Length: 381
Image (cartoon, one colour):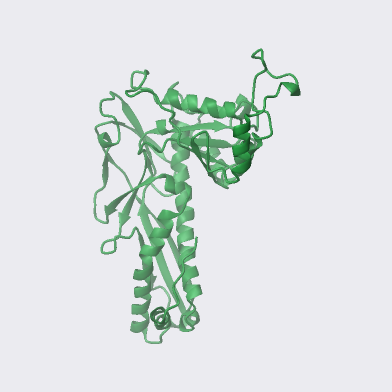
């Protein structure tokens, strides 16, 4: 992800003016650059393939009193209540509220910001690379904060889900074998999603049941396990239905599947699901630690890998299945008046003349909401 400024005479003159000794001229040039690059920074952030991009954006004005009519996102004929998860502050523990399907949902937004500065001499020398790197770094810092707040809501909604047994954590199953992810686990996860997506009476929903998983949020290690299906046995039972006792009982995957796994280096999809590889997922990684912290904070019981014990981030990792065919993951964002940009970039006026610094301050006001936890399932590996 990179922001580039084209090297034209107009752009060079504008950047040089930012370093002018005339304070008014310099400020006008700095403000012009901020106005020019605000929509660019916003577009870069919104188009980046991150965990935050799993949320659909709802845009509101700066002085709006935003709300979401739940009956437009939920089957109003379902005589049921739904659980809504949201954050009060950035990085805070998301909490859930129970709403009737016909209710109007009010929510809170919070500000994610970044402030950066560079030496005035770079502006006088028309160093476009320094200016572009400054705004690239601003976008990266905002995206990093967005990633964590987005995953907080995902983790909380998944952990607190209690659709089938009425106890927190029942949207999560354990893998068949410790530290192994095989086709049998994926098959069980699909069945779990079907059970969760029942009608209000616990029966088959109108239109029939569906898989309920379109995307899998996984670590590089899980992708490794998927690639290993091309040369490792994929069965978990012997011919008589018991556990395989000998290596010769191992059943390889069909040749067509093995060929596709060999040929698909990036593995964009598998079993009809999109595989989203995230480096923050995995044992002892950032998102795994956040998930473990949510489990502890909620006092939920989440099974560990191999269906033994309880989840531990130092020994188990979570794989998250998401149904993106339903608009349940929402990102309300405030649009800046006059520009239509979600990211507001302004000149940072904290620096005096003798500091020889040019600063910029960028912020985005947004929220993260999950309006139905039945779109989330997980497996502990």
